[in-house]
Length: 191
Image (cartoon, rainbow, N blue to C red):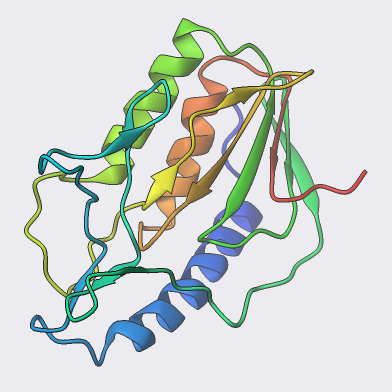
């Protein structure tokens, strides 16, 4: 099997670094008395809130303890780069500009039991400890990924990689490749 090319790794690392640096700068002034950073969301009974048919948990960017509201962070700066592609095995992978906290992923391939299991396993690893204590430190985890929805050519979903390490994107790519799709698009590919 071919390997993930250095260009992909370098771009992913740069996109993540720019986002996480801005996020870290924003939460640096928070205290444990005023905020919780990257909290796992709970339902009204105090259980982990999940959504969609795959019952995926999710995290907020941060919560204000003073207002009781969940807050969203949008990075003012994003990395721009030229769309590029490469092949791994029989799968063409196209990478267009994407935001670390909002990456659109389209897969031309079957959404079946194997694809669902590979996706769920990746999500569980990337989401981290659901029982982690709330605090103001960065958790190095994804915030959410939507349940993949079927499309005309396969399936699609969005992911907020939060503060997860850059190799989380490579792990996702390898998980998706486990079901041998024809094509994977990351970002908004313009044909």
